[in-house]
Length: 503
Image 1 (spheres, rainbow, N blue to C red):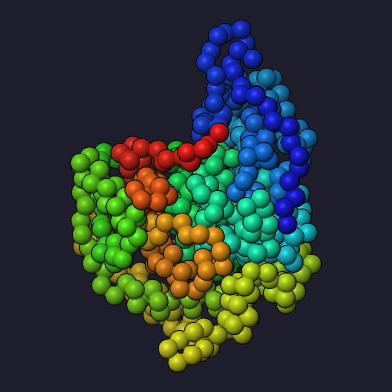
Image 2: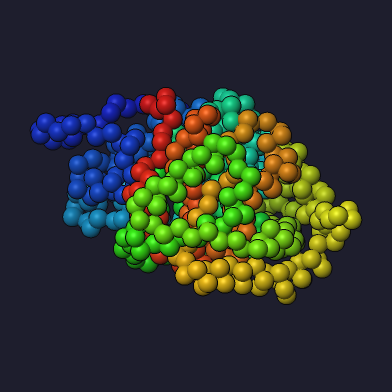
């Protein structure tokens, strides 16, 4: 499924290459999207140089199978040249003017494959952009490639058997290519961790932007469902899916969010004004490295003046279990069927399902999605009655628990380890059902009730030297506030670690 154009590497840019001043080198690899846009705006670097730099990295240093396809270099440089000429002629600066971005391979980008990581859709080339892409391009962004993913977004390992690269099947972790990157926004997270791109888009149904960022030391944001358009995105669930920005700084998440929504950023609060709930369930049964790193992160928050309040949230596991699988499985069949028919894919659901490669995804579709069945203590049972009960009772009860917890303790957000595990070895076992459920244990509950969540890197585990992430969740609609809090926490925790052998 990989279709990457051969590119030419370029040397490190210096300001002196553009002017006669003796300025220090600009290391484009370490710049954020925000910083890159500023330099292009100030004409201290051309968009053409920036695009060449990132295309070269994506081609020559992708030992992680992060990219499933790259845009043709000539096409990318035409777009970059147009931005440079626009600025030279006196055009105003754009928020993402001339900045390259990557996009998960289930979000439609005109003229680029939108395979969803599955064989049947490998040749599907959309003729229009998804609305979120129109927003980014209107702000000056240049989409340079699509990133690999867990097949049809039905998983959290990134171990996709239809996707072969230098290190074997599937996308690989940017800190250790023998391990999983998480998923399903696997390639976007691996590309960010390895510094193959400035910022990217993923999608999130139950943790798919946040969990892979936790495993690759990037920042993953799940907005309130409905904050961004979901049109032109291969779906799982009408009520739970959302596009989500992924980056290496909260500033870039805020930038992408503001471009997509047209909203304004909120001033980051002082640390001593922030009240975060620490829910016991989310802090239980952690991998030792996750426990150590996440507890250290809490210690740093306390020392900075953040108020941390233990909360119980009794019954959250049962309330989540009553709605999560039922909603996702029930909505998946009609959602995907509608997408295939309405977006000009030329494929039916049966054709897509018949060609699914990954055993875990094939099993989910054949046993659950297509027949409309889910597992229970009594064996497989019809999902429709469980879905109806979730809609009439279960989701309201779960929402009420969150709302009561926030109100009773006057919380700004909840804080917890994004996922209980560090990255596992990349093999079929990483996609097993019990592993999947454990991986999303902390990200999934709030996803059921539209809540926004932001995962930030907090360091490397002391034994494994693998990344650990900590998440904050807010009530629906509190996105701008949550991002502002994230900015304050990032200032306390510092930037995420980078792979030791990063070039």
